[in-house]
Image (cartoon, rainbow, N blue to C red; front, side, top):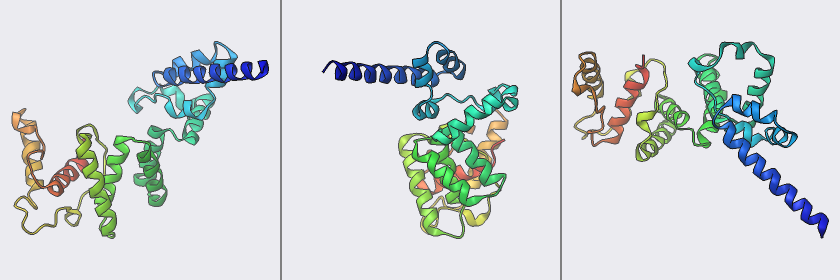
Length: 226
């Protein structure tokens, strides 16, 4: 009975250390490294996959340049990648899709990042599917994902560079839609207004009732990011 009691206490303490380590990792990589050097329990807790999935990854422009030269840093990020870190999966998916042109691998990784709740990955997957001209089912899936992002209010926070858009990528195919085909004009109007610092630059296509046309507008904005 005493052994079981001590065993349960050990498990509870371990869970506490893991919970603390996750919180620290989600704030800063440096703080995580410092915490792991404090004691063996913290060091062991930092080795869990859930900790590596929770690490706060700085944006590329804020990443110290020497990290790419450090074997220790490379091993750390490789471990985070294996653990399924959403942001790293998302970045690698973009490289596979648009740099290496490995579409199947890229889409698989993008789906994995999306399944973790990564909003930007979901947005990029949505736009990638909407740009498909060879698979109507995939375009419909993209439209459903777009509806989910729109309902969650996540569209304004998602910006990812995409390839050139063609006319055949138009989402709205409703003959009776009064705004169908007008989204490139609306986008150009907003862009020119932004260059003049006009208030008419704001709002996007939020006032358009057709969600498929709003998706067309976002495709225009998506492929024309600076």
